[in-house]
Amino acid sequence: MTNRGALALAERLPRPTEELHDDWVLSVSLHEPGRVQPDCLPWAERGSVRGFFHGLLFERESLAATTNSRSDCPDAELVLRVYEHGGEVALSRLRGSFVIAIIDRTRGLAIVARDPLGSHPLFYAEAGSCVLFAAASRPLLNSLGVSRALNRDALADHLCSRWPDPHETFFSAVRRVPAGRRAIVSAGHLSLERYWDPMPDDRPVQWLTAEETARFDEVFNQAVDRCLHNGPTGIFLSGGLDSISVAAVAADRARCIGHNPPLALSLGFTDPSCDERVRQAAVARELGLRQYLLDPHEAVGPRPLLEQALELNQEIDAPLLHTYKPSFLALARRARLNGVQTVLTGQGGDEWLAVTPLLAADLLRRGAILELAQFFGALLRSYEVSPLALARNLLWTCGLRPLAGSAFHRLMPEANKSRRLERLLAGDPIWVTPDPELRAEQRRRAECMLAAPEPRQGFYVRELRAGIDHTLIAWDAEEQYALGRRIGVQFLHPFWDPDVVEMLGRIPPRLLNEGGRTKGLIRQTLARRFPELRLERQRKVQATPVFLSLLLREGLALAEAVGDFPALSALGIVDGRATGAFVRAHITQPSLKSYRAWQPINLEMWVRSHGGH
Image (cartoon, rainbow, N blue to C red):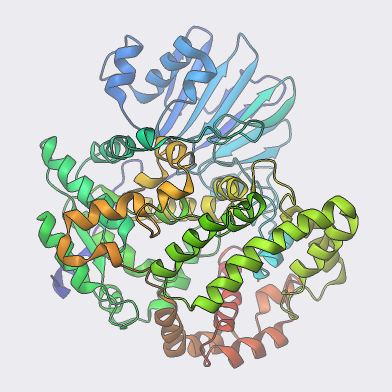
């Protein structure tokens, strides 16, 4: 269904004013944690304890019942009662997308936390004797005593695809409270501690049995239910297994609880390598969903898509991650015009349903050759990849090399570390960090990117843990939150529900690949639901050719407009002339290096938008 007039109207849709702007700042005194400002925030107070809440809280009725609260009491009061009944442990069981603060004057401490998986942003900065907290960097940067300087180290590392510190941002004075952590202010000190951890590193994983794994549908239904109780719903529906599974459950559960089924929002790519339009339309039709199926360029109108993508940098705390974001936002605006308040996605499926190839190292270490052969077959049947390339990646890159590194580490730990560090730095573009001091700092920071060479729970679990804490995961959530608030919708991701993550992290890889293909846990169910789509044989679609063709069409004009990267050059992050030459040489010759050509353009425009001139 397409309608240019309706899309144009959606572009002009007024932005909602209620709770749209996240310009609040919470100030906590380091030496008197009970003294907080401002009082105009929506605080709840009971005796010596105050509570603050911002965001979306799931399952309010259940929380109200267990705390003997009114069902219509404010969220801040409800959270305060949860704290009264169960303390800090009870707070870790809250679900939703939120920031909470508990000011306990009796204990002389302040607790400020974001939801377990960090779908709601939370940043902080120290200013004199106070710690300032906010949902975005800009309110902090506008506060007295907070430097607006950009973080040169982080900017340079980003161009080298390294993100060594999950706490840091691209502003020197602004830090992030990572997912699953809370900030504690007490006795003149600020500390951050992990309060939610689905795979604690100090004890073995309690792997689920096949019978326990059978409860996955129940847990996943619960996650989708939580998302459906927040007003009219849409779903970003691609042709992939993850979003189809969310759409199928959401359609069934919505009808079960008396809600309208979600509105299907689909981008249809015409490139044969990733054209899923027939499948997208068939799924929507089978589920009885109204659908907007638009070409990405049709969705954004006549202006170049990449030009609009770069403009979004003005409104977010880090450089734009996804080039097709303007097209998805256009779909979300169209949904907003239809009354949609929540848009679901299939994000998280790749992280938690797919099995990392580093499982190969664990299998080789155990001598499980048959399991390794089965794993190889599952990957070969699920991805468009040559058997030789897959064998090299699985057996050497993700298998023998990590094991050899572990052995070398036991014999010569310092030499092994130096070897790994040199390999990590070898891929840095030669046009990054002409400043010798900055380059030396990059080398020091790169050591933080070296994963444990002998993970106590194995390479598979190490990668799962890294996925939770990775900066790009937090960055992506913060980007979606900010841009969603801009148009008045909330993006929610059932596969990133804490209870789903806790369960999927404990399902053995062989059960995740049930049936001899990746994502077998959901693949077989979907194949039975949509038999004509042959999902049991579907392979992962890669959109690389589409992005490269987009760069070929629009990138050169942007490269010429950027010139020799004056903003990044002024900060000493790049050699502007060399960077410009590299970009112009590779932006018209689609290859893997084209990604490196887009990255400095995107970063240059973000820096210009945030005071770097």
